[in-house]
Amino acid sequence: MDLLDRVEMPGRDRIVDALLSRSAPFERTLGSGVRMGIDPTDRIERRFAIRSYERPLLRLLATTLRAGDAVIDGGAHVGYVALHAGAAVGSTGAVIAVEPDPGNLVRLRANIDRNTYPVRVEAAALSNRSGTARFTRDLTQGETGWGSLLTDPGERSDVIEVPTTTIDALASTVEDRPLRLIKLDVQGAEHDALLGAERTLSTHRPMVVVETVDVWWGSAQTTTVADVRALLRRHSYVERALARDGSLTEPHRDAATGVFVPDPR
Image (cartoon, rainbow, N blue to C red; front, top):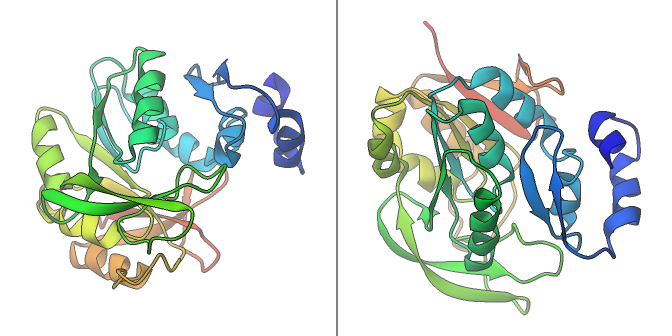
């Protein structure tokens, strides 16, 4: 496992699937020093075990974040990105891990307790207003990260009421630190989340990391990635793509993740 964490090779994820898919849950200290509980029945968590999931994003965090920075992780799942951000900002920083799914929240809090990073939990969904909303939990085996405010209920889902909050409200709690980065992975609700961040985008000017692949989540969805791009352009942000080494390049149509940075002009 340590070798697979350190070395990138073709077929690495398939090797991990074969090794772990029938294993019992276990704890692992990743190459970054982050300690996590791993549920090997979950497809994404098997990738956590060797840090093959979102590795370019982890590299971006390591090179962009500074000691004392603040980060908002929207759709924190069980803490993989939030904890790596916490490692980067150090004891003087602050990471707000926003997650509405009750099952994920139990795992998220347990993973935070395994570490000493400055990560705190906000048990809510990001939206354009504070209040409550219907949240559809996807109960598909091995896919704990697909819950959404927009998904139509199905046979393998559970609809619950969850609190909602805004990025602007959260940013007001870390005014004493530079808000360096916002990561959004909220299953189609990114535009609403950014509508709740317009004051933050205008004043704090954080980097925004968001998926740039259009996925149809359900009948409640009324916006697309094009609307996300338009909102950020309105706030004078420019889009960059995330290269494998964590550097920023010109955007291209195959990029699954967009990194939006304030226009320096």
